Length: 458
Image (cartoon, rainbow, N blue to C red):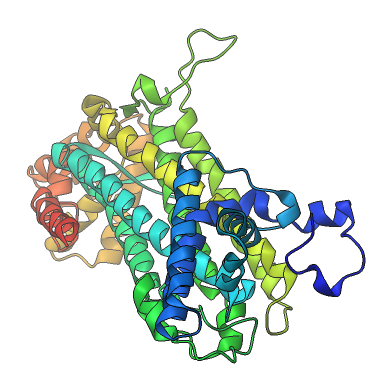
């Protein structure tokens, strides 16, 4: 089978080279975008009088026929045709004859593939934004049910202060909100049209790049043809945002793994999101959050891979840029697969309220409130901090918690203590006392939920 570009060559391509350089195995994912771009391109060629209107209609009809066949699973792509662009052009010529060869007038595979990726990533980014909203809705639903569920808050994975579970969950809502905002902002840079930039320098034909941009829904066109065909910043930005997003997914997954362990027993994941052991019949393994945590590494790898490909490339197009697609496709699939599972897993998990409350009654996480108590009595905070540190050490030595100490024991450390210290030390009081904006007090969590719900309506 002769190559569509083979006029200058006297030998057939080495089969190993053909296999090594072909991209059809993965860039066939761009098939619909390639046809979409071609339909706009041929429409413009006709509008500018570059090819006859009869040829335009014939080519459009042929492209739509190929699209129908692809959707019906009736198209087989060939490695001999290297990539999705040459495969579709070959299919078009077979479908409508030599007139199909006019489609590539005023266009190069360099601006064609860039256009396809812009179209593809624009659609996928919007899908991911929508899926992130579903995860946020699941978080809000659980947070609403657990405004007054008290749990230990941690720093250094050591119990720090009692907090509302709703407050803890909403921290992830805001992480995902920032991810969503970053993705939405990136659409401005994804939605640039490279079509018409040609191989690197534009074209001699009187094309209308703004027309094709308008037909394809782009906001603007690249003003520099070299930049248009060599730019992969929009993919780098997507991979970077995706890496941050996967970091947030991984952190949440880690907590779900910890909380569902027998050591914590704070939550139980629904059976439909867990698996068992082939040898230990008692096991219920949190495989889904573990895999979400693990898949973060491949997304990081895709970002580092493309950064490495791009770092030494001279302008304009180089074959190295063929390596831009697989990482992008893999990241899209990893993200969409992860988000599809994350939302229902959060929504269906059950919370062991009693276990969480029991945990905050069996630690010293209310110690800061004792210090604040003394500060309110007029003692400098640093002095109060030292006194409470000694009380905690004393309680540990006596195998007691702060609520177990007698009033007499408190008095031996400081005369400022009064009987009301026991009310101050109860977990719910500790939570409610943190009523500053953005704090964990139940009323603040309710305000935060209203703000979160307003964000979901935007």
